[in-house]
Amino acid sequence: MNKVSLTLLFFIALQSFFAQKILPENLSKKTKIYWDANKKHLHSTGSYYVDEINPETTEKHGKWLFYSLDGVLEEERFFYRNRQHGKQTVFFPNKTIKEIYYSRFNVPDSMYKAYNEKGVLLIQGNYQLGSPDGKWLFFYQDSSIWKTEFTSNDTTYLLDYFQDDSAHTQTVKEGQGFVKTYYSTGKTKESYTFSNGLKTGPFFELLASGKTSISGSFLKGKKDGVWEYFYADGTVQKREGYVADSLHGPYEVYYENGKPETVGQYVKGKKTGEWSWYSSQGAFLEMNGGFLDDQQHGDWEYYFSTGEHSYHAQFDHGKKTGEWNYHYRNGQDFRKGNYLNDLKTGLWQTWYEDGTLLMEGNYVNGKEEGEWKNNWPNGRVKNQSYYKLGKLNGAWYSFAPEGKLLLFGRYNKDLKTGKWTDFYNNGKKKEETSYKIKKVKNALDDVVSMGSKSKQSLEHGKHLAYSQVDYTLKESGKFKKGKKSGKWINYYPGGVVPAVVAYYKNGDLHGAFTQFDRMGNKMNEIHYHKGLKHGWFIVYGRNGKPISEKMFRYGHEMRKKNSEDGFAPN
Image: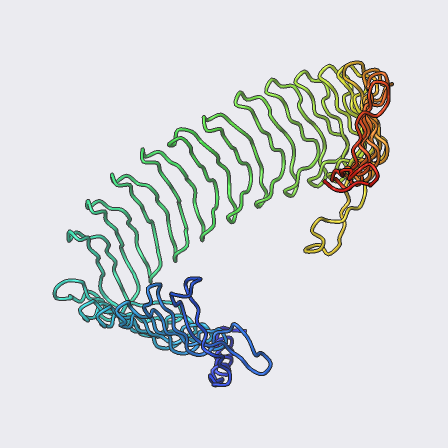
């Protein structure tokens, strides 16, 4: 569908819209909105839209007045169901009109006028569907004509122009002539030439010192040819070519010392051919490579800020491809691998700066696959793992620099599963923990995910921990869905005599919590219910008899009323 048809359809829709009138029965009682909570400073007042089906809305309807914080009328606007519709007026603080125009469907349409505080007309023109259209007049503060423009099909033509001098000398007549702007000192700032209402020919902009800041040319209102931008001392900052407002030809940017910062070229607005960037005021090449249709293409080289080569890359129409080779500053390989269609593929390797292999593994379609190894600086394996479709899947091994096994377990799609065993550096067991993959309800299910579940790896099953002193059993118990459950025992060195025996439910103490001395004698016993002290708290003497007894109910200590009665809360 062409632009004319779309415009016609939109106009018909607007006509239908404006067929609606502001009817009294559709206006609510006048509403007042205030700047402050104390309702001392009125912000705006007007009515909302109402009807039999919608007895209450927040859609502005009809006339609304808007005020400044100090109570001065700033705007008078008309709305149709929350859309600016009809006459819109903006005021100066002295109550004179600043702007007046008409809106249709929230879009400026038809007449527009702007004034100064003395009521002098400064701008007069028309809008069509939100865009300037037709003849526009601009005036100086003394009411003298400044310029006349004509807008058609999004192109603005300068028809007449009068300078800001005492005589308001006309420099453009019927689209032919020139425009110059000046500094307050009277020196020229900018100079344009116009032909048939459009900028055509040389253009320049000068600094207050008189030195050129920008130079270029226009053709039928669009940038054309070579444009140059200058530093204050007159040296070139940037040079670029244009054809019909699109970058075309050499593109060069320079540091103030005259050395290049960026060098390349455009063809019809797109980067093409070889491009280079320089760092450190032009002392070192930062990167260079080719473009094709504005996309990186071919070989690219990247460098450290001090000039050493950093890495080699290849692109195919903007996508990474081929071998990529990264280096340390000393030239030693850092990382090497291949891309295919923007994804890592095949063997990738990383090295320490001395050349020792740090890591290696394979990619398939951008995801890790198969065996991967990380090494210590001495070359021994640090971690050995297995991947499937980019996720850890299978055995995991961690080793000490000397080669001793430190950790063993298994993954299933990035989640720990089964028994995991930690070892001390001497190879003795440190900890054994079992994991199970469970579906867990998302924390925000009531708000966002509506009851959805995600898989998580949770501690589940037997747990054992061993002492670093004598490597005997230090702790034993079980987890259930990531939380302590049932009987847990902590042992004194030797792994035989319990120090603490406790019972858990859903991760909270639940049942007896008992402490023992090294001889196995009970020292105290506390009863819990869902993490709160509940029941007897008894302290035992060396002879095994109670020496202190307290009663708790759901975390609160109870006191005994008298020898015959029961307990009451403290």
